[in-house]
Image (cartoon, rainbow, N blue to C red):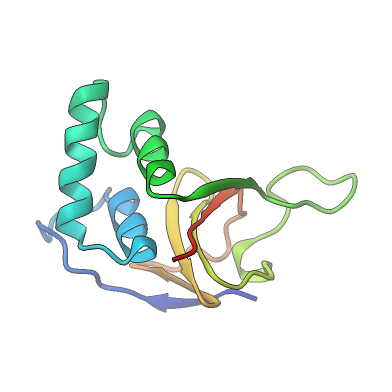
Length: 128
């Protein structure tokens, strides 16, 4: 089961609030916030989108070796039935849960707020 652990990663600007894409990716890839921010801004400029657009961040993490997985679901139940807090997962993952990205590392949801009550929609794993 996944437990919440607050992670106050050093950002470029303390006023940034909608930076979950950059935070979660930098935590899972073990790269600096600034380097991930820079890479996503460059890619976003090339693709014509902000870093938090799916068509920007998804190719970025896939280029880093991450692989997308659909959330396993109980038989005859809709996707998103499994909440993050009830997910039996070990390892590292960038997780999409209800329009939010969060980092899961070794049984902990590392984020600035507790989103473990939200369902897991899909996730990317990274093995280094």
